[in-house]
Image (tube, rainbow, N blue to C red; front, side):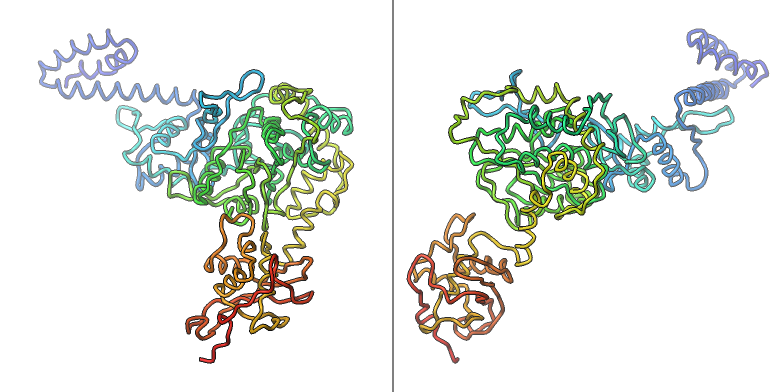
Length: 622
């Protein structure tokens, strides 16, 4: 290549980048000259390389203007170092986070589990031709597990990649396959996320709002601008909440109203002051019949804080599906796990393992919907449920706050008049005043008394300010939890178990009353003896669809072993063991049961004459 060609490389390359038409015209002329000297190929490569170099220099300047970090590729062990270096740049820009062990990006989208019931301007449900409510998926801001394309995109948002050449820096692509590797390599580099808050949260004595990652709380804030209207006194604030906002709801008692007033405070604190504590407890809005407003009450207690109508989650019969839906609700950033309209008369308690784990754990562990992976991280979600005459049993009784609505007997629900006919719209329109009332109450509360119940931090931060504002006794409010704890000391008690315990204690062996410690029976003998005595009804306790057979009875008694039951007939303890009773246990060691009388005389069979086990109970010597 002659000197003339060498001198034109910089000129031609610069023109191609800045004035392409003029540059390529000159490039073609110089290629013709190069062809005469047999250096056409070398000249073409040199110009193309310099064009890339000039563009690289321009990219460097542009990257600096955009605030992107410049990373030069090359060196030993390049890929591992690249993963770390890019991860640090992504973390610095807060373009991705570590949420529950998942490298995640914040995005908006349709919920996979929650639907919003559509309403008209008057707040009434929109229904289809069959009369069913029309729903659509709730739109949520969520922490979505990162995919390889997303990793590639955030890399380009955070970094400008180059490779040094003799002709200057050149733009470089991300090495093949590195995007997928970065997802695992960034887990311990990215900032940890406690949750997403699209609503204000209570932090260090004030309502916190803003946009983006908050370093102290480790929350991703998306609250927009916040306006609140505080009150001059706590008395004015609590009066506004009770006599204006919630005035239309027929609370069964002052305690039921207090529970409703606590739901918004739980929402304000669940991701800040309570984020490292068990709870909040389940809030259950219940009523004896439809039409009392329990769903409206749950909706406005959530919407007052979030500024939007919450989507409700269908509470599946499958424990596995319930676990996945709770995990999805956490990942999707729901403020509340809203279980609307549970089946009337259904039970909440022993079978609800995932819900119990959510309420009692500081961090929730569960499987992810549509995946075999497991989420383990902060929950920060408030469980809220509604239903008619829902029965809370077992440990759930001291983990639940019930707010019951009961319309007066002389009031026709269809003819009621309301101060706020469209309570949802009124709540959203007056959200600044509602939040201002809560800000006034929480800011003024300084009294510290010993908390009562299963959730001391929740009681101190949430319940006490509301109870003090209402002038209510804390002991009276927490009495249901105190009673539940006293019952727990006797063992977990199931409804209907007392009647079964009495029936077992009433059985006779060889026409003799059982000793105080009770006689050992098999489940089949007990079932046969109770049926023979005409008391079969006790074998169908509440919640069971049919009379229990021997296998079901054995399972029932095992679940209640060690529990103490008190009543008019006396005090009894169900006990279980494994024994060899000859023919009665088919010459094997099998589960057997007895009932110890702790107080009272030997009872008679409930709902029938004394029962005998006849030949079944003859002692076998063989």
